[in-house]
Each structure stands twice: as C-alpha cells, then as structure tokens.
Length: 174
Image 1: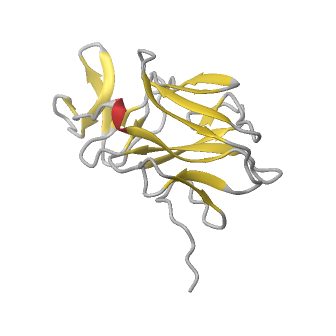
Image 2: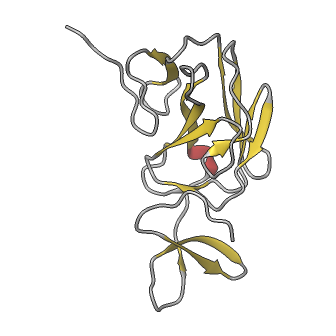
C-alpha cells in the first residue's frame, strides 16, 4: 500500500479488500471513518509566479466541517498538465493542503508547473467528474491569489499575506 498524506488521530486499515481511513481500534476489528464527498474540495489559494528558487503551489481546502475527504485517485489539471493523486491521502474537515507544482516526486508534489502568464486549474474526482475550476490571469511574482473567505467564490490577491496550508487573510492597515 502506498501511503500519502495522513490525518492525526486516524488510522488506515483494510475493510474487505480495500485500504481506507479508519477510526483507531488497536487490537480490535477495523472500523471505517465517515468521509465527505470530494465535492467539498475547493481550490483555495495558488501561487503561479513564485520568487526565484521557490516552487509554485496550489492549496486545496475541505469545506466540510464534519468529515475528511479522500484524495486518492483525484486529478489536478492545468492548461499544461495533468496529475493524479495516487497515494492513500486525506484532507481533514476544514483543513488546508499545500501541493507543490514543481515536477518533483512525493505525495505533496505535482508533476507540472503553473503558468505565470495565466491559466486554469481544474479538480476532478477519481471518476474524472469535474469538481471545481478556477481561471487566473497573469500573476505578480511572489503574490498568491485565492478565495476570501476560504472556499468562497470571491478571488483576491494576497500581497504580503501569502498563507499556504492555513486560512487566507489580507493585511489591514489603519
């Protein structure tokens, strides 16, 4: 079994012939954990023009407040690439996940880079049904864009408040 990104206080175990998220049950039969639908996932923040030496990235957000979402088998696509999340991975309820668009190997790396001149990000479930998409224009170096509030439809730029893996915010000066 290939393990990917795991959740604290949860276990992975076999239910029948499949590996899946479980409630911890040491020395007892495995009990599957409840999962939310992949439709709860949203592109929450992205950085498509990183400062030199740093990778581009995409942040996913789980809008469900009650259950994690299984990521294994999901596809992330751009105007120039496609990547399937192959490892057994999960995103906590209300959680954030930063995925590096750097063509490197690992459960939190994507096999494509983002286009700084603009593009489209698309998320598909394991059956290739589109879950969500967002299009963005030319990007300013070191400035991310994303949803404010988290998971909403409003897209803003985060100059000086880039927040991968955490809630989005903007700086307010009086």
